[in-house]
Image 1 (cartoon, rainbow, N blue to C red):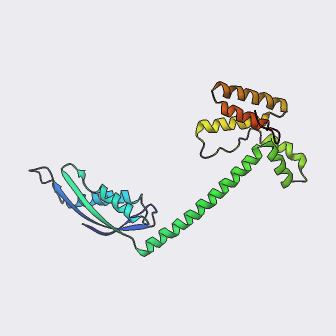
Image 2 (tube, rainbow, N blue to C red):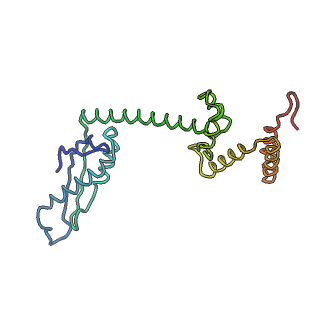
Image 3 (cartoon, one colour):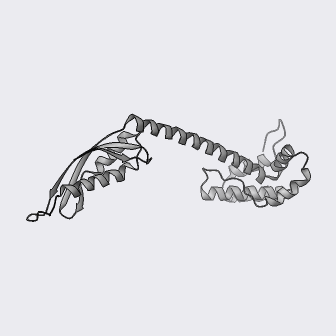
Length: 227
């Protein structure tokens, strides 16, 4: 019914070559339907095929083949007209070469984009941490140390980058903890924080975590055994 038709893949300039063998039948007895019913039947198959193939790649012919034949099993382009079809797909060498070149360029762009995002996330992590920011500024601009305060003011409130695998709650807790620890400048403040943390973990029944918090905050002397 349809032979040698070119239909766009997910890349509009790269096409499948499509052959569809279809059939139709009129399901209303006593009513001829009027006109050449093969015309709406062909148009229905053509429209259905184009609609599904534009979501697929010519480099994955099997997936496109399964998708289109699943769709064309049965359809009703108009009341009383039942249409079904079977598609055969092929790809010319020129179309395949274009798709492969597009895939290579897309992969290179994705890698470059990923590297840039990683670089920016690392820079954000440095700038959000006052200690790291100070060291970074001294290394980058050793003759402009007096300008560091201006940078700190401009970056006030800049959060550390959120890890991609964090869920919302975990990310919120991590950012809050980072901000809290950053504001605890004196040993006395940090001591109070650790004591409160240990009490909270103990109350929640996490004695192991409470002990770990104490040991991390005050490592035991070399050669001694922690209580």
